[in-house]
Amino acid sequence: MVEHKFGRRDFLKVGSASALGASMGLAGEAASVQEPGVMPDAHEKKFPQLALITNYSPQKLAFAASAHYQGVVIKVDRSFNPRLSDSQIDQILSTARQHSIRIISIECMDPNHIVRDSGERQKANEEFIHCLEFGHRLGCKFVGTFSGGMDGASIDDQAKALADVVNEKYLPVCEKLDITMGWENYPCPTNFATVPAAWERVFSLVPNRRLGLEFDPSHLVRQYINPYEAAWNFRDRILGVHAKDTEITEPILQKVGIHGQGWWRYRIPGQGLIDWPRFITVLLHAGFGGGMAVEHEDPFWDEPPSNDAPEFPQARKDGFILAERFLRMYLPGRAD
View 1 (cartoon, helix red, strand yellow):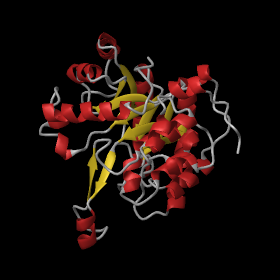
View 2 (tube, rainbow, N blue to C red):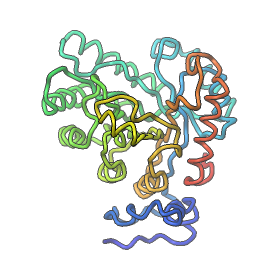
View 3 (spheres, helix red, strand yellow):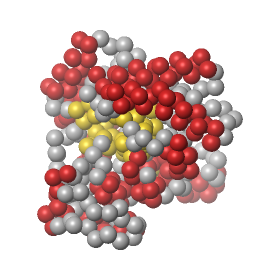
View 4 (cartoon, rainbow, N blue to C red):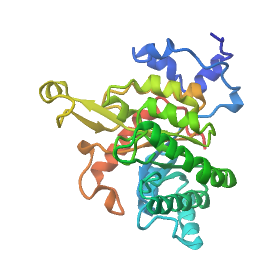
């Protein structure tokens, strides 16, 4: 094991995440994992940028800033998409500057990159290229998406199809625009690469680090996959992070089984099973400096119309505020 050159001042700079986790009895297992080598020098250190995921509105950017988030991750939708004019984009960026909030990245989940029909696939690929260009126009360095899906196809076949699209169509655009892309590991029919075995296959075919993961530990917890080990093993390919927790209700699980309903639900960070000091320690050791975006899907801290209105309802604001307060304990101070 390589001994880290990591002094007391550097340790305090990262907010004492490892020590705090250990003192709470939470980070012990992380210390037993093989470490990656020498930590970067102090002036080279990168830290996660705390953000929230939202649809666009000036009010929501203002709220994110008031709740002490460093940035926002904005979803592509009917009113926020590559068809916006330069003047509209200038207005969005002006609003962000006004509130001292960064648009860290965008999310473009709709295109199925590997849909079976060749015409539909070409259309989806062109749509995503426009999303990469849109992200670049907004000053983003990362665009999130899904991996795509082909009904009935094996993981190997789907990985090969995705790799072909990425290598031939997306990476030349990413190189030109100096931008990266990655998929969230949310299990659904249009997202085949949601487990480590599938990630390994894709990355073996796409060694270019401009392709990576938008890593969400909550989706691994509900599949009984160790999120800390997965994050460590793929730390060099984590380009974005979703901060969301998972609660499992054991009495219901014991009655209905894993194929039943109601035995798990998503929660805001700190109100589920994820060991956040341990997970964040992995990100700190890996030098992750991208967006760590709270994805609020916790029904306990929400009420309609939620994301659809220009302004968040107060219950949803409360959830975001509590998530920021909790995660900030394990992160360094505002580093803009």
